[in-house]
Image 1 (tube, each protein chain N blue to C red):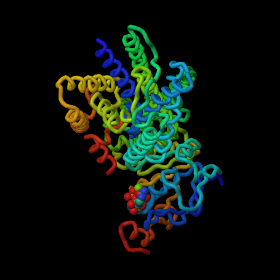
Image 2 (cartoon, each protein chain N blue to C red):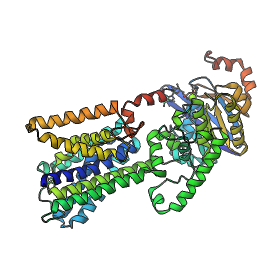
Image 3 (spheres, helix red, strand yellow):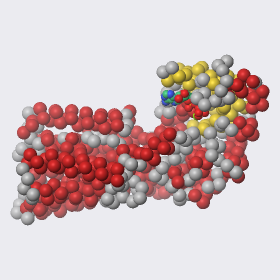
Image 4 (cartoon, helix red, strand yellow):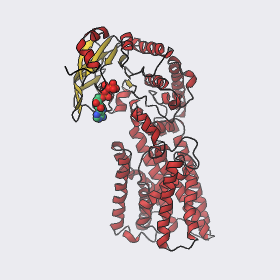
Length: 304
Length: 255
Ligand SMILES: Nc1ncnc2c1ncn2[C@@H]1O[C@H](COP(=O)(O)OP(=O)(O)OP(=O)(O)O)[C@@H](O)[C@H]1O
Ligand SMILES: [Mg+2]
């Protein structure tokens, strides 16, 4: 029972992460893969604030999310100058740089990780309560992103993603939108990280590396980039799938690479065969279409 | 004189390719200027310089007396520059009407805070913008396509949508890059009429076209560009009488 509840907590965390990543990458078309670093910032900041300054956990969680939001300038500002493939590279640099710092600072626990983080709630049904809490937060995350991308603001986001130059030439400010999308998306990732930290009481730097970027990317692509429900579907599938593989009882030396292979295969398969993901309609792929089969369509347009 | 746009000593090169070589030009209110020249003359690049897609190496551009050459693109658009694109550049995952709404001067969805806290005024702006977009679609003869995806229309229809989109902001200066490409039949007359009406409303219009008879029909003054230089200016007939220019246009030698 406890095991199932723990998996459900992970699903909730991943729904928040994938949904917020989709806001940036799918809807915004902003090719940053550094999303896990905001997850890390939320987890570490909230954990450290609670441990060293004895800040009440609910407050430290909000502060962790807020700090992640502010630090999102670290990728949103470069995104004003570079885009596409260059932003991917800049964001990887940002992610690895901060991870390197976390890995080497003593007070973050270095490579060993941060331990003894106070938990948010205790008691006999602590996991059940936490599952309910995370379900509510995840539902709010999905609704918030749904609200942002519909209507007038959503139309502007779509236009910016379709053609930033044409968008700017019509008097629209792409810079504002990028900053807002990164801030909200990263804040949500920070919140997920803080919640994680105060449930498991322990985080390590390796949880927030490129592998996690790949996992989140897979969730978004498989579920359907730039769709409301896609990241949710992707997060549920790709959180339960590795758990299911665990039951095969394979040794760790095979397990870890196997997961990598599965993620990579899924991403490549979906980008080519079904860029709209499991839940998307006939058109789609959002910000990922430049990397997908519909890139051919864009190439045709640009060649004119 | 009331120059809407004034370009002085403008210079730009990409490596060895000079796209603007000491260009001096001005567009007056109510005037339609034709801009012609062979492929690669620098016509589109001049539009890119004026609208802010590329920064100039030297020189100045003023819009109604304000220096704009260092301003970001969206800022220039807001104070009165509108353009169309040679290759239409529709927002491809959006409907025709949404393509137009994006270009509204006071865009209702400019900030999330405004949408959240000033719902009433946002709704009013959207209402106004939608009505305006409908009128413009009517004028370019595509009102019945408003809910179709812009990218699914024919090239000529996309050109007309691009024109309507550029008219959404009531800009003082209109830069039209080959508005007639792919436009046929009745639509040809429609576009001529719309461009004339916009000039009569006091806007400065500059039109790039390879269709010389169209330029003859519509322009008050025509400018000939070659290798980034403005070589001559006058009526189309004056320019075509100059055999040196026609040679250049049709692939002759360097002067
Ligand atoms: N961003 C750029 N980088 C490098 N070279 C460029 C760039 N933009 C334009 N050029 C070059 O500058 C020259 C002028 O191009 P431009 O598009 O302005 O010509 P044009 O007069 O509009 O021609 P056309 O009638 O074919 O549209 C061309 O040789 C083009 O290849
Ligand atoms: Mg051109």
